[in-house]
Image (cartoon, rainbow, N blue to C red; front, side):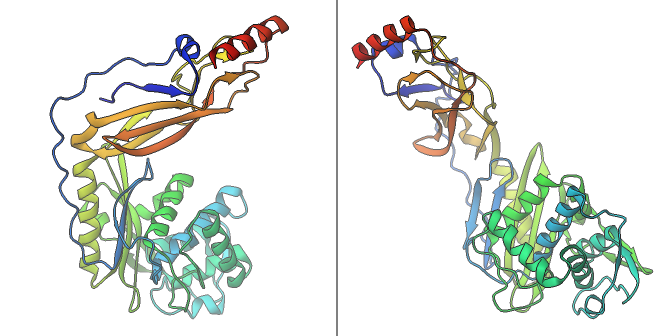
Length: 390
C-alpha cells in the first residue's frame, strides 16, 4: 500500500486551515523490506532493461555508449514505414518496384528480384522476420524517394525522440563509419514503436515468413522459447557482435531488454532472457494516481469559488522492487497561495513519489477546473486575508 499523501505549500495557517489536503491514511508494514537480489552478471558490451509503462531503467551498463547496432537499425526503418502507413502516405497493399540497388544488397536477404513488384506488407515481413537488407532498402527508396532522403528522415526522427547517441548512415545497419546507436536509444525506439503502432507491431511476433518459395524463421529466438515474448530485432556484424532488442509482457507488465556486443547468438538470447526474467521476478508496477483524479482542493483567493480541485494531467505509475511497495510515499507540493483567475491545466505545484528516502518520480500538478475572478467584494476581502496570512 502507498502511504498517505502529504501536502506542503508556502503559506500561513489560514491557507492550511481551508485546504482539503489529505487522502485516506493507509496502514504500512512494520517489517523492513528484504533486499532485492542483484542483477544478472552479463558479458554484453552494453545493455539496458527498461520498464515500458514508467520508462524507468531497472538495470544498465554503458547504456549511453554509441556502438554499431547492425540490423537493429531496421527498427527505425520499420518505425518510419509504420508512420507512413498510419498517416496514409502509403498502404500495405501498395506495389513497390524492386530497384537494382535493393536487389544487389548483401547480407541477410528476402530474395526479391530486380524489376519485380512486391507489396509493402511483404517487404515489411521480409525485413522484420527475415531481416532482409534488400527489403529494407526497397522500403526506404519507396518511402523516401531515395535512400539518402530516407536516412535523413531516420536521423530527424532519432533527434525528435531524444535518441542523442544515435546516427544513421543507411536503413539496414550495414557497417558504415559513424553508424551508431546506444542501448538506451534502442530501448527508447522500441518503446515508441510499440506505443505508437500497436496494430502493426504484430509483425514482430511473426515466427516465420515464406517468400518466393523460401521459408525463413524469425531470428528472434526468444519468440520460440517464451510465449510472453512478443518480438524485437536481432543484429550481427563483426564490429557489432551479436545484438538483440526484445520485449515481453507478463501479468500486465511490459519490459524491454537490449543487449549489445555479445559473442554468440546463444549468448544474446540467454542474456536478454536473463534480464527480462530478473525484471519480472523482482519488480512490479504500482499505479500511484490517475490523471484527472482530485488530489486536493486547496484554498484559492479572489476567485468565484473558495477552492479548486488539483491533480495530475496523466496517470502516474512507478516501478518498485516487489518487497518494497509499502515503502512508497507521495507528497503534494503547492507553489504557494493560489489566486484567481485559474484556468484548467494551469500548473500549481508538483507530486513527488518517494521510495524510502529516494525520490523516484515527480510530476506537475495542475488545476482540474476553471476558477475565474470573483466580484469586487470577494477580491477586497481575500486581499485582506492574504495580507493577514503573510
